[in-house]
Image 1 (cartoon, rainbow, N blue to C red):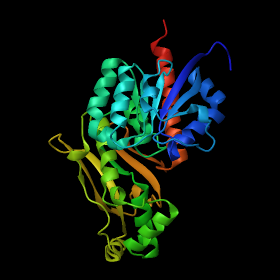
Image 2: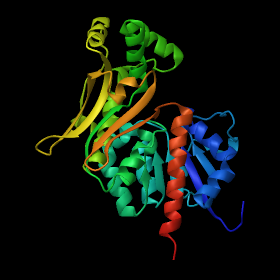
Image 3: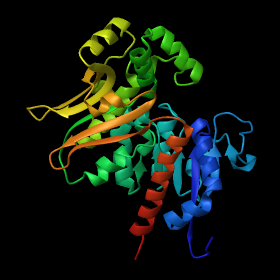
Length: 330
């Protein structure tokens, strides 16, 4: 690595499925990522909840003192992949107070306390990026925030939960009941042991709140999102949809009403087979955007898992590093 490149030290909070993938990629792809960023990226410290070795992660990087990561004066950027509300919220606020930019995949936190966190970041003059919080590797946040910044978005509809889309796909294609397919999803690792957040629409509701906030330049919290899951969908419902040349999908919908009010909801929808979202199968995600100038756009890809989510986080890391470089020029 060229000695002319400035060093950017990275601290990470969490080292689970996503965090460990980020750490491995930061180490294996360091040279290429540094070239793209314009700075030498160095993973300095990883805060974990419990002690113990992590496969492929040098033990010297690990610490159970989470606040030592955000308070380290040498750390420039903090990546938060702990999940949950606390202590993630307190840690992010501490990082921001210490003038560190933050990258997070924490949709639940942002959908609940996003207003507080974004205001803190603005006041401190640091970045808070969250591409990985919605739809994994699909670059929907950056596209809405940057590429469509000059347009007026009128509606966003998305299949943003892979677990429920997998279940509904199997029910539609194989005629199976909900409980049977849920058990298969759990066996394959697509669904948690407690699948409530997914199957009752809570996960999708958090993502819907983030998409609505971004699309309509407002603050929408998860408490303002109507949510209904798929646990009551029966084979008879699926059969009825087929008769009408349709398919049932769990959609997150954010739109402007005729009164220019923001409506945000999550619920099963009977989609005509001709609609672009109808062809999204299994655990894949897709987001369909309607705007005044660009018209109709669709973004499709893997919405969950260690590698897709890590890809989104590293994309944010490159973007934040470039922004730091440009904002300090001169």
